[in-house]
Length: 496
Image (cartoon, helix red, strand yellow):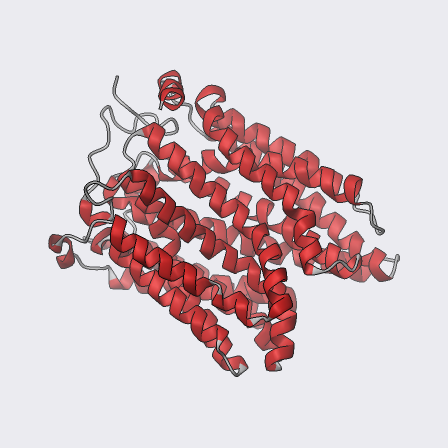
């Protein structure tokens, strides 16, 4: 029977064409599992870096005498460069070869990590973080497209993307633990830890991935589209990142958001007229690709925000160390990782639509439970049990969204599809945190409780807002289209 993705009905009646070696498939004699390992480790490193630096910010401030704005932009500078360059780097991997872009990202990311770890002044660290974000923009989409371009069988692709999802989901909280351990020695190791990992990945990519074919080097990037979408994403991320401190009514915040929207409209106009568009708008004709990216946008906030607020709660309200905080959140990470693996088997059996609905409802229950966060330490009932429920729910939504966002499209557009997925995840996390941080701060400022109780009041309302978003995600998932060949996909997954 012809193979089709379990989330892409009508995507075609035959198996996808074999991936072009120019796009980074395995060298002859190299197992596809090796490609998946390289991709997963790269994604783990990129996501790890997003959280590991947050834990080390106090030590960085003390070590380099950072001002408050510089300290803030150690994080935001990375996010702006990352979010702004994602689609540009993703399309470059489609046109010039995934191995080429992947290795370029590794070199840039690792070199910037080394420069940041050796920084002697605040501006040096900030510059290194911006360059590091540019390297991450090349790594994130190319790591997933390595899998989608090389794993053409539905069961193999789903299994590989499952491990990619595990790497991405576990790295966020692992960064809290690893960051706490490394920062206790020196904040510099938080940056330098990426250097040996990047070097190992570079050697592995040279060994495992096929080189770029020369025919692809004549392809051209849509420069007008690249410029408008890069500036649009960068200005939008800048506005969102600045909002919690400057306020949503600040001129620079409003100006950035308006500029981002105008540039996005200009980008769409450019793409419609371009003979070689940066983002082929036809990929949005696949309903599940559209909905998968919307779900990823929503879940970016639902997955990221609880870890952010709980980290602040455990350290600033309860006075826990960074290491103890990471260990306290480790069960949630373990449940997410296990749930993502389980969802691989459940997608063809239960169906993607039902799985996301179930996951959204379960996550909402856990978030409402977190809305009863105690002012004093009650770890088991106040943190452990509700975070396990939240982790179980979010883990069920991740794989269906990833598979939907990358299925039913031409293999030549795998890179840009991966870039869209990563952009939606990053924007969802950034926008969600900015809005929720504003809500929490507003509740705290108007609370009559005072002290830590007022801070906890703000966190509680933020968790309730997240519960509403989780339920909204479950409702949106009803628009995912079921596949008629679910049973066949299930048999493939079970016998593979």
